[in-house]
Image (cartoon, rainbow, N blue to C red; front, top):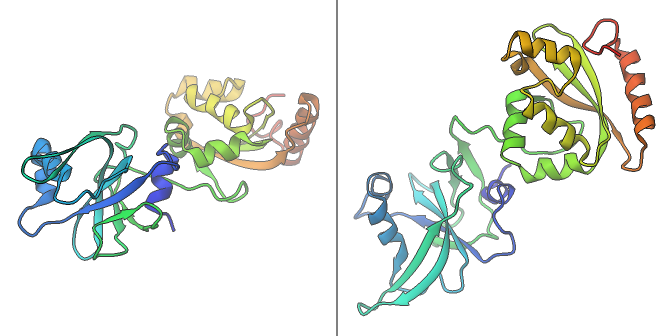
Length: 266
């Protein structure tokens, strides 16, 4: 199960801040249509309250209520100021927080308590659906994943904190499978930033990571990297020397025959 908390915190929302989840639904107004067609009117609706419900709140995570308990995510807002108006309402000043654009309007959650339309973020809520265009894959274990190149690019580009933390924490031997040709490439990651740092190189070079045979493939066809799949073969201790890591890499090349039949040239 993926929760909205995981998605937000993975994109940098401050876990130590005071945060409320807010679900807008009004029988008198089509809130989603208001949000889509008149953003200023929507913000005026959101920022004006009869009670001081955002007292001492740093951020609100905003949703539009849909059928039943379904709720559509529409943004994160930082509360910057509060006034008490002559009309007896609390008027909050808010600014939208960048970094969550890929989630907006695409993520649907189940609101856990229909009675309470504003709740503290500690109340976990399950993500029911992520509309096409967002392909988030949560990190679970080093041996439990095979990433295609598009997934790796998204993880690196968006700096997903769970993947960055775990892949930076260890060095290792990794495998690239070229699904178009069936050929394999074995590599080792022994730099300061571990597997994360090495795989970032592949993203920044469109898939080849400055490896000779992979570079030839990408030069001949710039889209060929889309056929690559990345996985971890073996974890190495942080204290391993470069020479020791290369010896392990060489062993896997021999086991898989990647020098003779694959994409390794040494």
